[in-house]
Length: 195
Length: 332
Image (cartoon, rainbow over all chains, first blue to last red):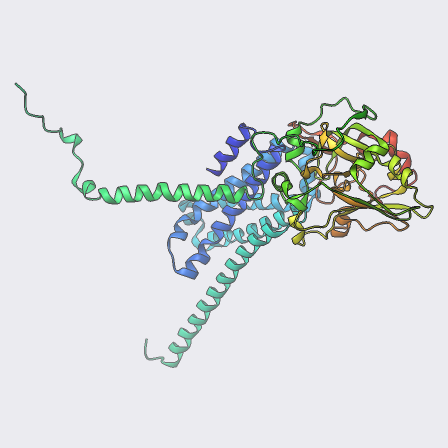
């Protein structure tokens, strides 16, 4: 729906005087929203013990990937008119573009291994380790946005805070789990005969 | 004679287990449509935040206030370009005027807050006589001139704008600065009632820009009072603004209330906010990149492909001499 809205307004000359820049920015923001949403599933589960976020997590992640890919293609094809040299120079020389490109590169293996078969093939442990890349991608995306903005940093800070809150909740849950495990171990040690 | 209605064939009969779940179907169907519509609408509005669509119809040309002297254009065509001017709609709906809105389209919507009549411009500092001027006085003194200038924004887009105004050099001569006047400082109105974003601390207010005195007296430097033959709309810096076509657009301070002649280089707003990104000179230079993006090319508003950016925005013949011997990478 948001993509359709952008495409419709683009075709109707309703994206303002600089439609390519507007489309690029809106798709970029949409990508960040999808990334933050997919990274908020686990924290929502932790905070409210809801199960539905985990069921939509993969779809959200894939939405993020396709949105980021489209964002890059708009930049490459419409903004830079496929001037590969200029794009390569941008990626190498401009920190904010390098960060965004790194996020796209990291998203590729995650999208490729998003099926249940891949989990089985890689083994859950290795698959999970690989998909921890999502944390890095989230951070890269927020930095990419922050460095792009000229003066009003409210929006990138809001998205950064959403991610940070999620990381804090994960950290807290992990800490609690390991403490609970230690507590179980110590009770077992105290009553060796109980098992 | 009518035959009794035929019983429905077995293929038309809803399976009992589905029939039993009919309410669930309707409910989950409605839920699905509802949530996806709500999510889609939410995502659309979130991702277009701060970039509202411009109005479908172009904003009206502002009218001169009743009782004002009707505008007569005395001179046309100096330093003109044969390039097609950007449409009035684009010039007046794609603006960087942070005090009125951080996005490009917001300033046009908030411009009604800015009251550009009556207006006074203070002339202060190293001049023979400090004084207060109004727009009519400027026109009476110097006459109105049309200048079609290219405008290159530091964000790598550009326009062609038919300005109406007075040459800054003529005004400076008339104001008779003293020999100590090495720089000119231009200050924008400070009034959060009229310029609401001055409540935020995104930049330091009021907006201040500056020129070296020899830049200010270059024949290209211009004080614009109007565009497309009519008074400036608020979003373009009503009632008067600076136009320095060989420099990036942010040098053109809007809605000016003070012109101050001084000995020291003025501290300007953007170079204060990010000294490594915006210099005092800010001459258009395709060879000196902004640290975050290239300045080698630009998109002319209304065109799809990019074009090469020219040194001094194509005005090198008129202004390159001002910077002879200067390291333009250091003084960017």
